[in-house]
Image (cartoon, rainbow, N blue to C red; front, side):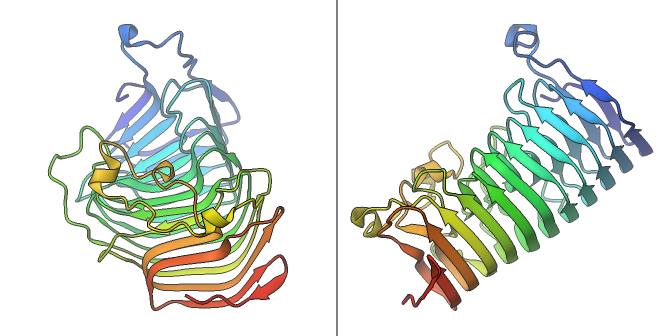
Length: 352
């Protein structure tokens, strides 16, 4: 996928802007392995001071855009529609700094926006994403997976997510970098199976990643606040899911002012489920840490495991159908504090 329609390397101070449309004509019938595979639409390498403004980008054969080791990026008022082929990511920022994305909409066949760090010496930091609309066949906002470098200072605010097949906020550290200091605020989600999906484990992100895996470093400092999520039309396994690993905790997470509506339907057997699979190398095999490895959760709302310093304040859960599971379930959580947890408009006192 390194080939592309539009390419820049070591360039400075340029823009792609206007109210027109760039159509990559990336239908699978035009791009097969025999014809050389599937190119991206745009790829920028080691560039500085870039603007992408007001354009519509449609029908890439693979990723819509890849930004590698770039600095000072402004994306404003764009529309991306990338359903015509697989792996149709919208904006992929790898090792980029000082990025501002605003007032844009995404309808993608893969991650709408992805932050990643494929090199240890190229962090992804100072990222602001606001006033955007997401719909996707995979994740709306992904941070990590490719995570050999560090992530720092990320905000996502005033966005809506709807009809996401996998996760709204998918945050994963698994290649030895450090991830810290992120705020997610004023978000609305509809039909998003996992509004928040966080994992901290150890696994190679791709076939081109080094065979030797780096030790797990750190994942800390996350605030999620003012979120409304409606999953009443989805199955019973819709929940917020957060997990570290034994002796490798995610630290300092706040969940504040969250309204969550789910279909319910959890059985007594579901409620008594224990020993969910850990994201060990044995469990993962050659695959990434995905929710499918876990199975049905013992909670109807929030499941958190291997976290140090978890604060939940003002969490409102509504179940449409009867559900025998607790609204919040903890496993190996230390230094936690829960306050004002409501189930179907009645405050509940949970013992952990």
